[in-house]
Length: 130
Length: 290
Length: 134
Image 1 (cartoon, each protein chain N blue to C red):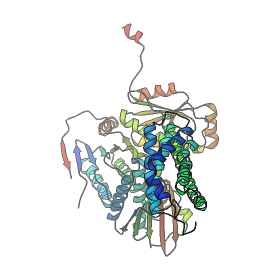
Image 2 (image 1 turned 120 degrees about the vertical axis):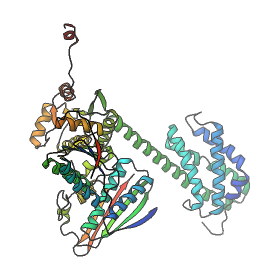
Image 3 (image 1 turned 135 degrees about the vertical axis):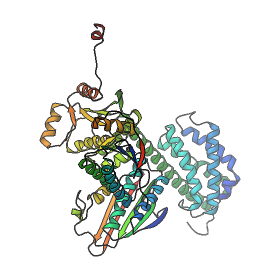
Image 4 (image 1 turned 30 degrees about the vertical axis):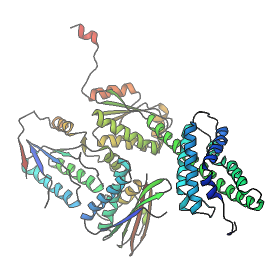
């Protein structure tokens, strides 16, 4: 079954969504991420949606859920790279993703994570988390 | 129109095209106010092309109606001539005169051809008259459509121009709204703002509503939408320029601004934005004192 | 005026939601809708397609490219033969859901479209038509 890969950078998890997600894939991501946060005791999660050309209420809810679940596991989530057309549509749809922290791009998202986690800059190891 | 009547129009158009173009050209020129806006060559070309297409159309379709497919090339040509005239600033009558001024030259030719066959002449003149009238009206309609397009486009441009997004500092944008914020305008505002956020990598956007006359529940909703959209892209918004009356209206209406920061003046909002960016403004003199 | 072209897609399984999105995206792009307008109708289609599958027990989406005078448009019809909606007014309210969704599908799709029409009969099914014009 196809899965969205989750990358690990120190105690941060990085996810890049590049495919047109069907519902089951979104739910699988939700499960995989929560599992990974526990397994690696991650403190932060960065979800890059800069390739997503559409976010509907299902995907929007998935993002909100991931954010809430991560919080319960003491991890901060930042969603980055929402495209302008997607943002305008989401707002029109009626979703504000209130509890979800956002940033313009990966760079800012990382800065936001570091800032909120008060982490010292450290050597980052990149491995794929499964 | 009696079915036994066979109009001489097709052959007249074919046989006498050069003379018609000449006579028609003269008639047209006297009706156009902007002498020189259309060169004589262009006029001759447009006229010749029209006659050519008309000749073909009446040959195929002798019903006297212009709805048939045979008249499509004619109408296409008229639409493009009309469009050109509209954009050059001619009036609708001047534009329609392109077609109407063809009547007399055609009648003159009919006279020459039919000589003394008066009843035939009468029928021809009626038929041609009707045909030219229909085509003339079509030209007027095409003119109106073009005008509407221009007005629509200008309205769109006005909308975009009236919502400029300016960069106040690195990472700080300002959006001074002038005029009322309806749903159409909100869409344009959101698109401009978000585009600018992406282009400049802004973290803060100051939306100044000094120029917004009233803030009712709808306007507040539109503002909220804009703020939410910017937030989804990682930029915080500060609303500034809130006049005392606006503050009163907001409270009276029970409008919920949530946790959006609001400031009375753009200057105050800028101060907050700068602090957010981790910057400070210092007096140079103080530096020198060290 | 008759549509320029039409196409029908089945809405049976979850994978069909993605197919629907892609088809609508393709047509909207061909009709040269702005990026924002494309995104709006694709998102509306995603919501309504999901509704048809999850609540309507499956159905179909009929696409039609329209021409009305000078303007072009895209029409999507979502039809299912599921349980139908008893109280339309209630269903169109934000947040109302009979399932585990967010309740934004119907009302959201309405906001994202220029024209929205819904016909539903309990026990027979639901038919939703949305249109976006250029």
